[in-house]
Length: 469
Image (cartoon, rainbow, N blue to C red):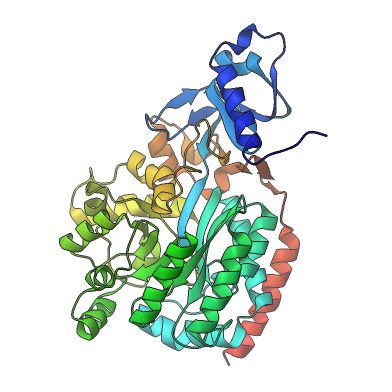
């Protein structure tokens, strides 16, 4: 019986890659891999931003072992599963850098309000009356189906009962950075921060080495946690080597409150207490100064930009062009469906590009390719996982999406990035592969039961309506 040692799979992948690029064509037999995706226009988002016409991607053990032109690679590989992408575009899986996935069940319960009123008068009470583990599982399945249908292969979450979210995410075959929420008042899953921290340690240890799940801690915001709890979060992050997800500087009211309480704006305050570092993922960052942007850059913080949620809640416009100019990793997020009201990253791309043009008065700001970077490799950088995903290149996880280019709204196409950012819709996504496993083929979900999900969502809709009376 062969002995499989840690790292053997990676070694096999490396050997395959070496054979490919050292003359594999001289071998009598092609190398057997798990999957081949061939044909189509491959938008790699690698360091050179290579775009390959009639490309081929070879996948083995969940990783990309070769990518190039089909005419150069076709004879080198054979696979039991061959996916034909001819006439379509093949892209890295999209990355949603900030959401609250179970909140799909709160979609539309409270619209057209500012953040503080929306949270305190509607969302927090609705959560207190409805959020249970069963609720979280149902909302997660609904959100996962929506994410997959829109070509999202990785998402970053912040909510309660995060262990249940992790279980549903892993079963669906989706990649997630999943943050267990900590907040200073009683929450649906824990009544005190201390209870939440204890739960978080168990959650983190359970999922630490999972191939799809990266466990994280998610202190809600500087204004909902005491300094000692923020410091404790950072201590656990350092000890267990896990990311931290937090809302920062989302509204002017938040900035005013923190400044009044601590004598410094939120980013200054978090810097002063030693909270920010290269494992931090900060959502929103709407109201930050030039000095604070420099602080974020020096600390290596990743930023999740949520243009549509920020617009809908009238929170403001984040200085994304300034952050990108400083070299900060900025990804795109949808926020939760209760404030957006969907998980459609294609709409976020289109909105981000246009929002920053109109607010800066410069049509050259955030061109299409830069926005597409934010939705792929830039999002991976923001989540501190660019070594895993975000681009189609040898050695990375096979997180691959195939998108139709044959829809009426896509004709004619002159620039692939402009077509992807300004005209492509979530409904144009045909096939989604995560970690080398198809989770949707030709719009058919393979790991989730769509009819059952809709039925369950209807049940919780009635429960929520009754709870708000």
